[in-house]
Amino acid sequence: MILTCPCCGGRYSIEAGVADEAARQAVAAALGIPANLKEPVLRYLALFRPDKHALSWSRAGKLLDELAGMIASGTITRDGRVYSAPVDVWAKALDQLQAKQAGDKPLTRPLKNHGYLLEIVRGMADKAEARQEQVREDRRRQQPEGKRSGMAEISAQLQGLGNTLRGRRGKAES
Image 1: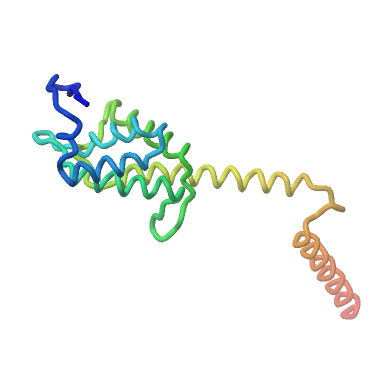
Image 2: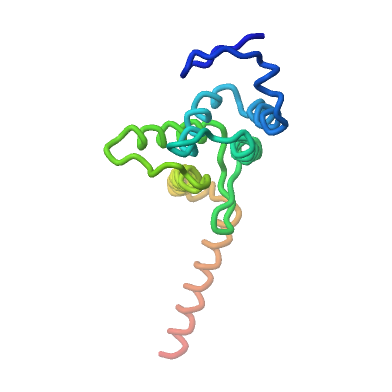
């Protein structure tokens, strides 16, 4: 199969493109990326390219392998805490990163690691977790007295018992 470079118009065979071991590893890692993320991930990789050089196959392969692993696991770990990171969060984070790059203050290239992207993912995970917690709290508050969860019922009974004991102690001291 003959490929045409979209940048320079050069033509080469796909076999020549993946003759290098690092190129094969990069392609293999890219195959592990979900289809809806392939284009945003390729744009993201461009942020790692030095201004005066091409991004090496070995560097591209390493970056893709790291990213594919995190996306496949559905989680990230930051500062010792594990955050949920489903594919839709990755898509939104990559879009947000590209919007930042196209904005008034683009990122300084080349990026050194995935830190900035992971901070975006962490922020989105924190917001999703806060929304879920708010929904749970709203449901708990809307639950009628007679239909409390087991722990809420026990808590209410202990609170009532505490009030009763305080009332008895107050009468005994009078």
